[in-house]
Image 1 (tube, one colour):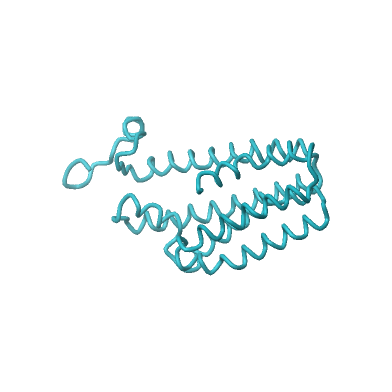
Image 2: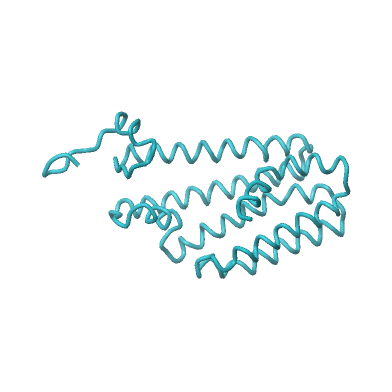
Length: 206
């Protein structure tokens, strides 16, 4: 179910754009609300305790948006869903900055338990970077939803924003290897080792 939801979310802008040509916004909202509700409850028990506290507020926000959209039958209300998703990601990442470890540090420790103080601080900085991105992306999506055309919203939300996510992820990934020269067996290690050879430690090569 997880991967079906991911596919649904990625295709959401195109599905909405195409669906509005055939259906009322109210019917699409009922479908979207049902999918979000099922996914939320399916994932709730797997959330870490800290982020589980965000579950109810985010669920209420999503349910309220779905209810308002269904009652108003306004197609533009559907365009705000990706903005709400970005705000929920902002809340999830931001909560880990308030009470650590940061989300990026948690992900890093899935690969290695040994993180230096500099790497831990870097993880917090990257978590802040993603928080800033989610905030700006939500604002851009909302602007296109409220004042742009449906085609402009679809182009940004369904293409440009994904390219920006990929660019940010790739840029941070390359910079991280340039800065720390830590290689943990990823498929890209051979290339990155050539670009950024490991630094020599006092006792010999690292």
